[in-house]
Image (tube, rainbow, N blue to C red; front, top):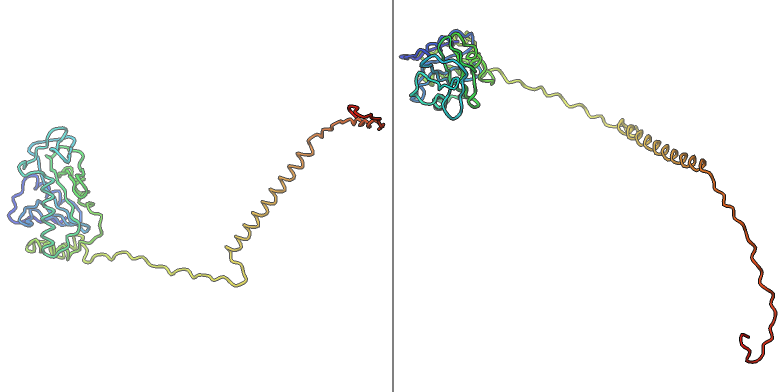
Amino acid sequence: MLVRVGPGAELSGAEREFVACLRSYPTTGLAVINLEADNRRVDAVVWTPRGLTVLEVHGFRRRQSGILTTPAEGPWTISDTPVELDDPDSGSPADRVEHGIYAVKHMLQRALRDPGHISGAVVLVPFRGAVVRPARTTLRPGLDVVVGNVTDATELRIYLEGFSAGPRNWTVDRVIGACDAFGLAHFAPSRAELIDAGFEQNAPEPATTIARPPKPRVEPTPGVATKSQAYAGWSVFVVAAVGVLLVLGVIVSALAHDSTRPTSVTDTTTSPTPSPPPYRPVECWPFQSGC
């Protein structure tokens, strides 16, 4: 990785350790240390072919090892002990890196340069031999905390190689234009150095999707049934045949049920109806009752 330190920079021990880490990486990128952006000092700005990140570098006042906890509200701790940074009066590290992101973005926009998406991270550099875990944690989307020094620089390298998942839009000309916007033309890398470092001269063209011509629509021949019509006709025939078989099955079942039932015979005896008595005239007298 190409590293450029701003003129007149007075680096702390943690910042010198950080610069040694960057120079040992075989990563394509350009890191500018001690950058002045919009009247504000930014510890480091790193360009890679896929993005731009602003870094705030902090060391420790004493050797601390353990589990790092970075709550959104409240002090950061290592194994329940407050983190003792080498610059405690500089304010919140997260706030400082956010201010640095805004300053870098504003300065590029003022120079009519497209900043794109800018990430940010707080880099904690412990004493050599001290182990702080996790070596990376996310404060919120686009803002991380990364722990690393020369002896334990893997996570810092992973962050720098993968902090942006965008396309390779930071070309040689775009990086040179950004350096000009910050007034770094006098010590920025040359075009040949950027190409040798792995930056591309032209942005790759976006992948285009080849449109396939639509399949020709086959018009049905008059008088000839299409495949869908044939399927529909066979479906109707099958349904009708199944219905007829069901009806025949019900009839056969009913006949078989009736033939197996025994017929009960009712024995009825007919009694003769008695004939009325023969008519015989009765002689009636005057004033005779019942006559």
